[in-house]
Image (tube, rainbow, N blue to C red; front, side, top):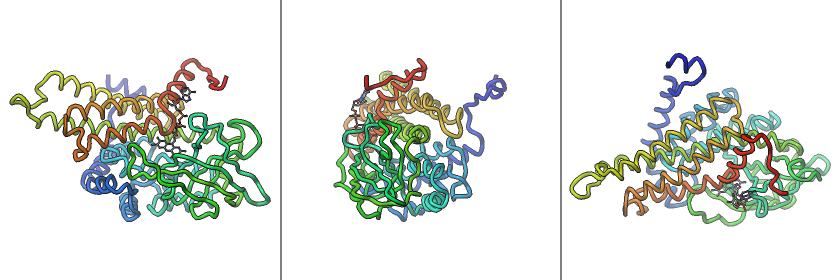
Length: 394
Ligand SMILES: Cc1cc2nc3c(=O)[nH]c(=O)nc-3n(C[C@H](O)[C@H](O)[C@H](O)COP(=O)(O)OP(=O)(O)OC[C@H]3O[C@@H](n4cnc5c(N)ncnc54)[C@H](O)[C@@H]3O)c2cc1C
């Protein structure tokens, strides 16, 4: 039976190399990152540069970027195996890995002029630079194609004006992939993306947003006031929105993996808690209601992992919209449930800031908003099943 499944491309086991990679990431994350995660949750500061260097020395940053550019050239699936281990510790410590294996640097690596892309990709892989993506605006969230930030060509420059919102990394990241409108074409047709260095005159940031979770992932509004850049900083010109969205499917798999890591950690913590916590003279694991809750959590974590891996195994280069939407939507839903179950199983300790479950629950919620909401993923899924696109405007 195993042979038949393998022949048909269905093999649920990791290879020996993948297991070794997973072990390496797990050991690093578990042995090194616990105290850092606590520190970042307290301070709200992002992973310091000295730590990024350490991540880089171990090969974790941009590990799925090309070998020639400083990555390890491993597959997207392998990179998500690494990311899950970091996400089990905390969102904040995993965020630089998330950005470098699934974030905007991949759009830059694919589409920017090589003389611009190569040094930036190398700097990300060396832990010297962080790149963030700035798509959303005050009046353009789900309706992203309503964005109004304008990129106007003047001679040999592109001049950006507008306001962005919710950018994770704003003020901290060294460079931004800014989605903007570069032609008078309405909707998606006029949209492209420009690479903006943090130090460019005219670029400023609003005060740090105070979010429910995601402490250690600073976010803020971005203001672009006559920001002038060479034309070569245009990464994707107007008309390339489809390319941007196809590349964004990798980011959505990263989002699903962050959710998966949080859920897997909540399950792991719950398993040891229910064995040690005693009530009525025995471990609470002996109560059937507890067993049923644990089993439900485990089923959800396992299924989420399979959906993420399937999306990446089916399309190793870039996962499809349908597979990604299913994986992201499922992982986003179950992480809220599983992290909520962990809080409940741990009773008062689950609700206490000291023990981690409370933080995980707050962090879990954000992933089903970031990168396209849960309901929008469902619209994508229905569209792919019914083989049509639903116009949300009519
Ligand atoms: C933690 C976090 C990190 C983020 N990081 C980034 C980032 O790095 N860069 C960036 O650019 N943005 C980022 N975002 C922004 C994120 O992409 C948007 O918040 C998201 O796309 C939703 O947009 P909105 O907040 O404007 O909500 P809205 O679009 O106003 O949606 C509000 C509600 O209406 C529902 N809704 C809207 N339209 C429809 C429809 N047609 N059918 C059914 N339901 C609909 C939505 O599902 C949602 O429940 C982040 C957000 C969060 C929470």
